[in-house]
Image (cartoon, rainbow, N blue to C red):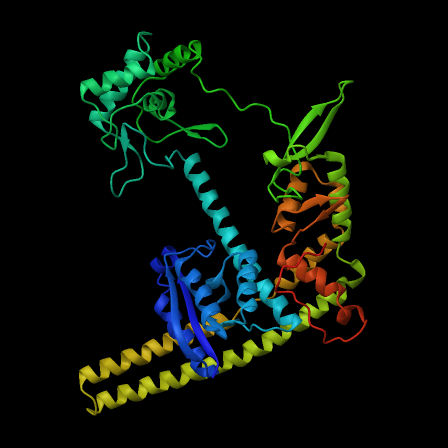
Length: 506
């Protein structure tokens, strides 16, 4: 009998929304029973985000599968396993290496080319959900900031009362803040002497600890005290909804004194833009290389990349050579435009096959739900006919309701809308088929975005070539499948492609 384990995960947010980990485990156990697996163990991560690979139960699962030669890991959905396609592919590769396959209650996973391609697409959709959620959260923070709400922990002098959203002054702390500014503008105190004065007066920080030089400096530079808010990343300031503690003129006086003493934070220094910073590794030790400019004897400026390791300081690679290496690589990674339609047709067929299986499951769960609802009606008739007492009726009715709820959850999971997916994949393939052209006309930031989306590791440069690189699993799936003998008409059309491993294409 095949040996299996169950893995389930919920984040704290999903727990709050009632996405029960026990419901996942129940569905996974049922799947294992249907498939005839011998269930060995259940692993569950509660309150863990899928974007984090360092999850306690997941780590235990990987060790367990290797030690006890587990055949299958049963999961509820792909996004329970990982919310990043890179992590999903890497984790699945580890399991497959140890002879363990992945089984989902909600998706059809397998080893044929189209099944692996669909799996990568689903993993990409899970990552899109996470990335989109981050964007929406950031957008929400920005909107709250623009509206005048303080986004982080209230500074010294303020608090946010339970059930409220706007900061309110704390009387004892307000006195300390006012004393800091009034004493500092006399010009007789430094940050250190002010901290000493506050401590002698009996004031303490929010945590009850003594004041220090940095804490005093933070008070004197915080625009919150004049009723404003500052977004540190952009330096943008807006009017806050909270009550100011000191006047703007007092704040400016303090700022002028700090400026005269050289204590004002300077603006960001002008930085050189290095295209391949964070995208190039040392060919000897694998550490990230850093970039800099040097000048020759005649004053000509040259860009070069060098290893951060002391042992390899002498390794310098000219920026022009790196440029040529990446241009060659981008050209090599271009998807074949002449195979665009046949590749998309292949995916369309795969999606249709997947849709057929889902339709079968939809009818299956609809029939299960109908039978359960009929059973519930019969139970009610028995209760009304005095064949059951009230406690028996409630207990059996609750059990049926749980089964109906589980059936509806399984039913909804089958109803995945692929209507826009093919169009999005077509746009993706079009971009890939003109990758070299887009690279040629792209701005600095656009090229950085292409590199970050293309690679899942940091490649190296050696002898005029970019080597040891891994492209993203979804792009690799397109790149491999469009060049496979099955699609191009060469050889056996049933040839399988190892798409679940994000293999280096160069």
